[in-house]
Length: 126
Image (tube, rainbow, N blue to C red; front, top):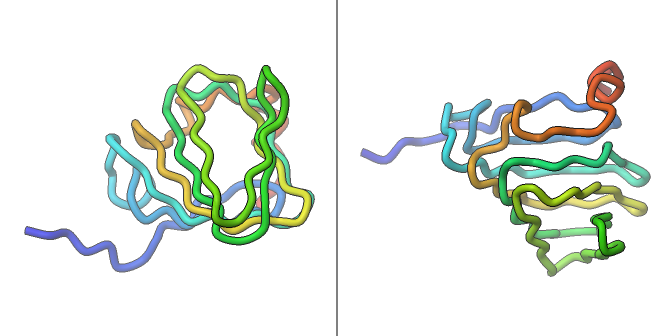
């Protein structure tokens, strides 16, 4: 039987970013895949990470930068970027961005492996 997700789960993060998870640990208890709508304000950034999941990001509005060992990839509205498990990446925005992210397996805090994670997690959620 189809399972309706009546509303996304709001996942708190520092820096003014809004995460609305439709499928995944926080919303549906799914550990295979997560699908989330993200709103990242201008100037948003997070620490570098080496996640244990592939992430497929589709930018709907604005743009974002993905820093990686070979440089920086700029992703604009209408484009997508794929990062693979084990890659060191860091996401930032200059003008802000609205995007969807799909993670395989599902996003979970224990699988992200952010640098300076304790510092990042101590910031209050805005």
